[in-house]
Length: 228
Image: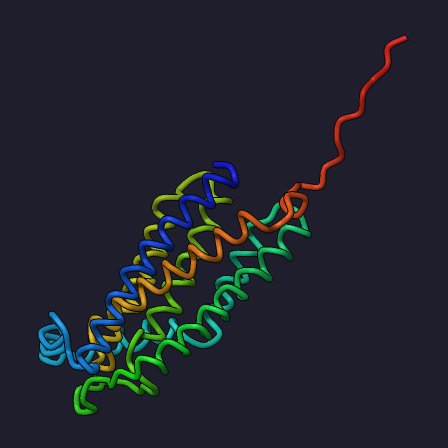
């Protein structure tokens, strides 16, 4: 795919996700943060199905969606993406920048919407701040998207299996937030939509504005030979 195709695809996906996210945000605000379709059912099921082993797994998995782990993953993915030192440095800089700015923007939206979390009695882990969109969900989805992009560029074999595994991790982190009782399911949906929208913006911007020379392998052009 050339730059124009990448930009158009990323832009279309991002626009669709932002549109859906905007609609969901307006619905959440319009209902003053109250539970929406399926929220209470998902929470009730989660509270009623919490064996000790499942709780331990959920807590361990949810911990991978925040802190240093997502940044380590995207930096590693960036380093593996490039073929030259310049490409690796560029990718390892842009990937965490995309993640950090997305987290900052998400935090601003969270403060603006100010949706309360489920009742404290349902919590099976620590949480702080407002509820929509879910921070762990957004971070894990952004991380998964960036790692999948790196895999798509660099892994010639086994790409589908690797991408599926990473995508499942990103989705499961979001679902643990509902299972642990600290988010409504629509908070998780909001986090997924936000992540897709922001990835679309970042990929579209990179495709349009980064100089082509930054992506070049840096190899010298073949020399012409003169025959006498």
